[in-house]
Length: 65
Image (cartoon, rainbow, N blue to C red):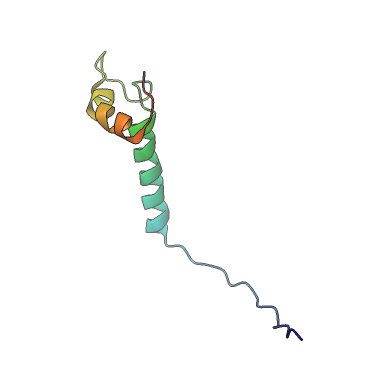
C-alpha cells in the first residue's frame, strides 16, 4: 500500500531588493541587445547602440534588419 505524507505548508520566499534591481537591469540589457534599433536611445541620427551590438545579435539569431 502507498503511504500518504502530510501536506507541507508553503513558506514565503524572501527575495532581496538588490536581486529585483539586478533582474530589472538584466531585462533592460537584454532589451538593448535584442530590440533596440534607435527608437529608445537614439543619439542624433547615429545608431551607435545598434552598430555596437550588431554582430552579437546575429550570433544569437536575432533578426535586426
